[in-house]
Structure formats: structure tokens, C-alpha cells
Image (cartoon, rainbow over all chains, first blue to last red; front, side, top):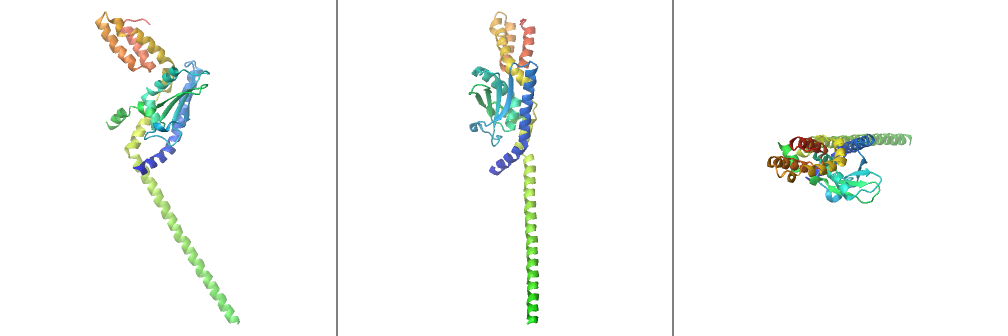
Length: 137
Length: 139
């Protein structure tokens, strides 16, 4: 079992690298487009961060397991604003499951001026029971 | 004396030839070991890949990855869902329709859906138009 986990991690690392970068690029591209067209008042920027090792799960990557979203608003965001952005991401089950499958385990919301941010354990919001039921059906 | 020298030379030549042959055969045998090791390694890796592809872990992961994600929707939700939710929760609260039991029942259902889709702008927009029709509200 231990050998199988290590083996899976080695292969996942090679497979997921490009997919992780592609997801981050897609997010940034959609955010940039929305900002340029005036649909979004603030530009969001996704990046890969170190993450929190306490939030690890079976699909976690070896390192850089944090998915960070930065709101480039030019001011520090209030905690409520960060929570709303975080909750929007966490309530999109498809996105959360994809983040988990690609090895992320921590969601971080930050602004571009302040030091503090919010972070969540992704696996708690993935509705994995539902995913397993769908998978076994 | 000459004959002894020439004999020694012949013996030396023969010894060198035997040593060279032994070295060549040793190298060849090592080559086989390398080839065998390489083949075993490739077989193990291939077996691991095939076994992994048929494992539930891999299939579940592929299924999770294949679900489509609407990034534009996520960005819309991040900026507009809260405002719409705040408006809808006030306008569609069942207590506003307590005088009419039919409308109150409809409002209860709609309000439950509003709370459920708090962070989904698209769903909230649909609920807004549904509330306009069913509860006769103007926004």
C-alpha cells in the first residue's frame, strides 16, 4: 500500500504539472477578460502557493499544495470580502473536486496590499461522499 | 639464447591474447546483465502504469478532473451573488406573505432555494424571475 501510494505520487507529479498550470492559466485568463470587459470590478489572480501541510489528503501533491487567489484591488480586503470570494469557490463543487484531483489541498484568498488572508481545507467542501456514490453508480 | 627469447615472446603474446579474450567475454557478460536489468525495470514500470490505470484511485481522479468548470461563472459569483442574495432574501422572505397562505408556501420554497444557492449568481437570477412571476414582486 505504501509503495502504491509512493508510485501514484511519482506518476501524478509528472502528469498533473501541466494540468495544474493550465487550470491556473484558464482562471487568470477568464479573470483578466472579465476585468477588461468591465464585468468584474476587481481583477483576480490565481497562483500556486506552499499550502498548509495540516490540510493534506490522499490526492495531495508533494509540495506547493496551495491554490491562492489574489484580489488586485489596490486596497486591503475586509475579512467578509475574502470569505465571500472563498465561499464562491468552495460552493462550486466541480471546481473544488478538480482542485483536489490536481493535488491542491488548501485554498487561500489574499489581497495585494495586506499581509493577512484566509485559508480553507479543500477536502471539507468537496462532497467526496457524493462523488464516490456517483462513481460507484 | 635466441630460441629462448623467441619462446618467451610467443608465450607473452599468447598470455596477452588469452587475457584480452577473457576481458572481452567479461564485458559481454556484464552487458547482458545491464540489458536484463533494464528490461526488468521497463517491465516493472509498465506493469505499474497498467495496474494504476485499472485502479479505482486513478479512475476516480480522472472522473473528478473531467468535470467541466465555468470560470466566468465563478468570477461573476464572486462579485455579484452577495448583492443579489441580500436583495432576494429581503423581498422573498415568507414572513412578508403571512397574510396569504398560498403565497407564503411558494415564498417558503423559493426562499429555501435562495439560501441554497447563496453563492450562485446564475441560479439566483433565475430565482429572481421566478419570484417576480409567482410572488408578484417587482424589483
